Amino acid sequence: MKVDAIQFTKGSALLKRELEAREKDPANSEDLFDHVMKPFSLKADAVQKEMQSRLEKVEKDFQDLVVIFSEDPKGVTPEEFFGVFAHFLENWHVRF
Figure 1 (cartoon, rainbow, N blue to C red):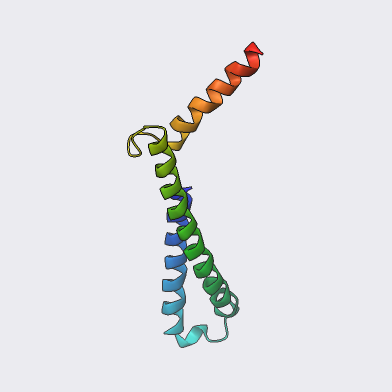
Figure 2 (cartoon, rainbow, N blue to C red):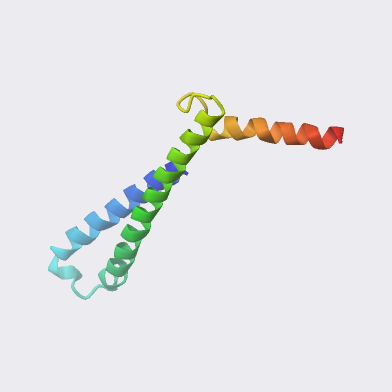
């Protein structure tokens, strides 16, 4: 999820730079790209900020949860942490 957020942020920044560069070129004045992509870019910025905010909250909540189980938040990944519970449930279903 973090990689997706980083890629989304990079793509949004690239689009902004492209739109800014196109504004300086009068040859692009009648091109529909700007007309379509400016509103998209504004909406993408809002989505990116919301996504970043949610990602930060999820990361903090995960760290708090890991601490409750006496694990090191920097030393365990979500896959490892939740994998323990998944493994337990799999074994539980096999036995019972």
